Amino acid sequence: MNATALRFRAFLWAIVYQSLARLVFALLSLALPLIALLRPKVGSWLRARLWPSPISFQPRVWLHAVSLGEAKIAMALLDALPPGSHDDWLVTATTPAGYHHFKQSLGHADRTDRIHFLPWDLPFCYRRLLGRRSWPELLLVETEIWPNLFAGATKAGARVIIVNGRLGPKTLRHRRNPFFRRIFDHLTMVGARGGTDIDRFSQFGLPPERMRVTGNMKFDLKARPLAESELRDWLARDKPTLVFASISHDEVPLLVPQAAALMRRFPELRLLWAPRHLEYLDQHLAALGEALAEAPPVLRSALKDLADPGSKGTDPRVLVLDTFGELASCYPFAKLSLIGGSFNDRGGQNFLESLQAGTPAVMGPSTENFRREVAEALDEAAIRVVAHAAEVAPVLGDMLEDGDGLQAMSRRAQAFLARHRGAIGRTSELLRELKLVD
Image 1 (cartoon, one colour):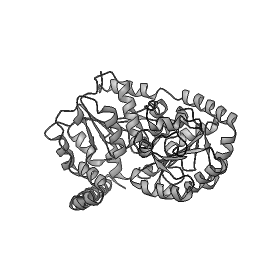
Image 2 (cartoon, one colour; image 1 turned 90 degrees about the vertical axis):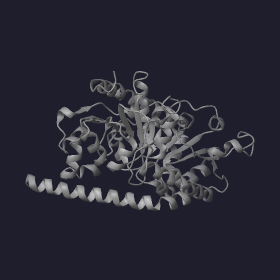
Image 3 (cartoon, one colour; image 1 turned 30 degrees about the vertical axis):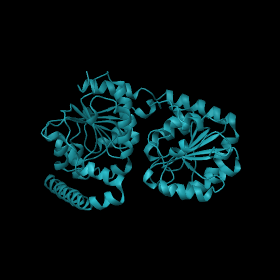
Image 4 (cartoon, one colour; image 1 turned 135 degrees about the vertical axis):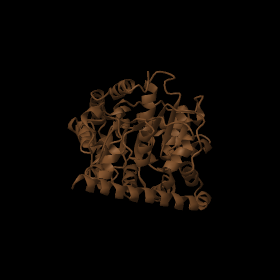
């Protein structure tokens, strides 16, 4: 295909994207009053993205993280930078979980209006957020592809930088699409997780001088100690606790029966169940309540309503985590964890948080989001992977009965983590070289 044909193909893709983005924006704006009435939280989130409130300061850097996992990485990076060096940064997230994590972590700062939801990917929405202020340098955690965001920044002379960058096979399918190659051409620098990611970025036409391996910052994350609370009191009881972490709604019918089988096999075992998305909380509760009628689930937010969470008859065996940002701090209290997002096609959630807490982890077959990390952890026997959901109860049950084996697995996991730390330091140095921080 010659250059003219490639440019024309990219032009057609751009027309399709811009038309769809505008059409969906118009439809959602029209439906917003009804959505806000039926689903107030969803309505509030949509309003903030479609019609963002203007900021009241001139940001030097715009830091974006899509969801909770990326927001944790962003906060760890900010904590590693010199005090005061990021006070004039605009911070955005796409999901409520990421937004609330930023609010909890940065809400005490003098500039409380620095935290926003990422606007809808249209020039009008970005202009509404920034007002008459100039575009800041754009810093994204991992890899979110927003054509108008990238184009707006580069058109204004701002740089577009990705840290902890990664590309999965699904994105790689578009490597020959001229529309996507033009989007990637906006990138000034990519700090990639590993050599595989460097190779994938290069397949989109990014030259070597605009890429660098900085490592995976998730290896450097440290959970904050769990604050004194009813949750901490519940976890601190001298009873074994199993964590089913970041369970997606489509994994509920697969994993609830496995959890119920484990609860019946071990009468003293307690279950901390953490849904991935709280908008499906009712579905999780209904399935758990039906499968565990003898041990009805209790919401973490309802613990305070119990007269004495530790007294007989009021100490629930099944606790459902319906709060943001507490899961990682719960792992140190658990004997074992099962990581969700790995029994569907979501690629698996972050198993490293469990290992960092000293808690062995088990995953399902879908581990694409952490393919290299999982492969290396398996080589070092620092994690278990099961082939399908039906293996969960037998495998976890046998592991729970082997206390010495769990301790040995935890030691191997700590050695595995130690060999991969340092990415935050390398990324901080990259930001200094790019003059984003002093």
